[in-house]
Amino acid sequence: MKYVVEATESELAAVRRVEEKLKTVKQNGMETWHVLHGGIYSRTIFLEKDQVIVGAQIKVPTTIMINGCLLISSGGESFEIKGVNVIPASKNRKQIMKATEKTSVTMCFATSAKTVEEAEEEFSDEAGNLMSRFSDSINHINITGE
Image 1 (cartoon, helix red, strand yellow):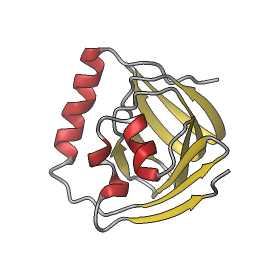
Image 2 (cartoon, helix red, strand yellow; image 1 turned 60 degrees about the vertical axis):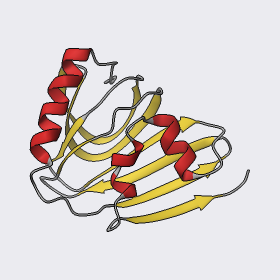
Image 3 (cartoon, one colour; image 1 turned 90 degrees about the vertical axis):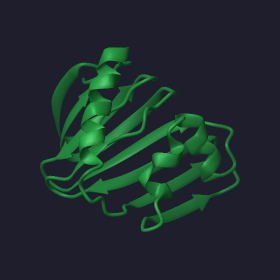
Image 4 (cartoon, helix red, strand yellow; image 1 turned 180 degrees about the horizontal axis):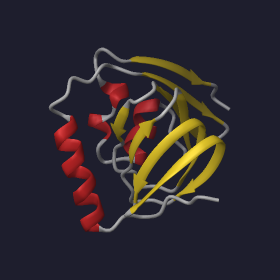
C-alpha cells in the first residue's frame, strides 16, 4: 500500500518551483464536490487525461481515495496509482499529480468545521489558492448538519 508522507523543506521547495512554472499556463476552473457530514469533510475533484495540478500544502493528516490512473509526487517520492486506492496521507505535504486517464481524487479528514471555507482553512494555509476559490470554478456543496 502506498502512503503519502510528510515532506521536508527542500522537497516542499522543489514542488513550489514546479507550481510557479505551472502558474504561467492558463488554468481552467475545476468542479469540486464538497461534503460535510458526521464530522468528516470530503472534497472530490476530477482530473482529465494529461491534466497536471499542484495541490495546496496540506497541514492535517487525511485519507485520499483515487479512482483512475495518476502519477503522484510527494515527500521526495514519485509513484503511479492505478485503479481504486485508499491512501493514508500525512500532514505537511504538497503533491504534484498528473492524470494519465480521467481520474477522481477525494480527500477526507475529521473536522468540526461547519462550512466549506472553515474546512479549507483548517486543512491548508494556502486555502486562498485552492481551485475551488477561483471565480470560474464550480462547487457542489452538501452540508448535512449531522
